[in-house]
Length: 493
Image (tube, rainbow, N blue to C red; front, side):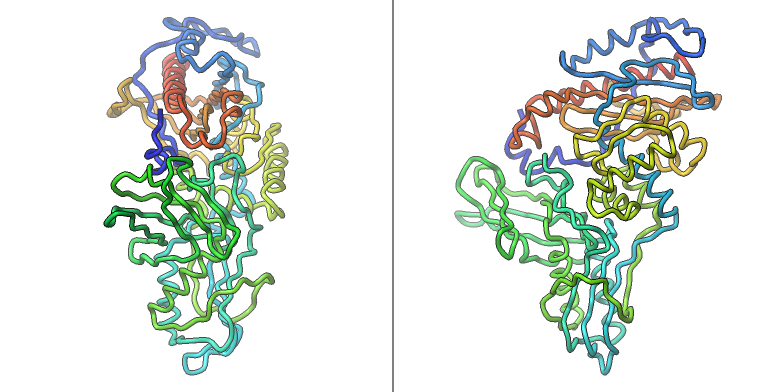
């Protein structure tokens, strides 16, 4: 059972899931399904896939679907439930990466700007100062601090008008998925201004007979406190967190019974433009710049650029997105690529693009895979990976090289088999898709989607961050994926 303290620490928060592969061990006794196109079935010694699936004990209602094919010809070597639509979880980010590269180009960068609506005279902006976002999902506090320093270096000390924030480069998204618990940092809001993956840092420690708490937007060099998010410790056992955005601030409470001696975790921000505006206001003041309190601006601003900061190029952003499985990055680049009015329309636009480009029938409700209503078959996922590798060479270098590990999780040095893939995990859902390349250079494409969606859907919200049995189920699912990859690398490599 997962404790309240583990929930408080966010130990199962939605970071990347790194699949460790085992040593070449068990091989199948036979091909599970007849292979198409008249290709003869290989003679496969040892344990069958069905035995491995049964041994994983994923549940009577669980679906175990997979396909493995030759990259060169598309010949399917082995498959099971290949046409059953399944939640792709974060494997959806591989499609998002392809979509963003196609729509925006590999060299695209987000630029966050500080604009002045009038001239600067003796250090005073004669008009408004506008912090204008482009939707950069990677913007950090230290970069905001550098923007404030650049403004000071130009001699700016104050403004005659207002300090405005513009966040409409992307449509506002209150949270990616309505299914997630309120406190999980991997389900934040999204807008044209984002900061620290739209998370605020909450820290607590014992103080006399109570607790000292702090909320800040910490970076490596700057740790500005924030007032737009506030925490109150309440004498109760459950729920661990409550949240209310009805007032001027985002009001949190936390159960005293879950705090222990002290600790910290990141909590989601639901008003990112307010968050960014307050932090920049604080950082500017530290540079000797006096600004009014921030106000939102709806219309796209125009004015002289006094300072700006660019994101990394899109390829680097996507590589980190796929490595660390950052949901806000997937949603921001997907929304920017589609230009849609909301997240549902943006997911639909990506679905249509994938259908036109790869001939598949996927349904995406978002770009991160966090929404469980997205559906993809392993046949379609493998088709995308294969065709992208042949026509859109930009994806495979962005995927993580998983390597091979033995059954105890120890890395096998100098493994002759290379596996590059994207993994994905939701409660009682585990997905993996990518490439296997043997020492001779023969390449296989695979997709494995495992899920007990009925068990997932039955979870009450209070249990969704750390459901009973969830961690053990995920471990068994990953072990099954390792065993299947081990089979294929021996048998078809």
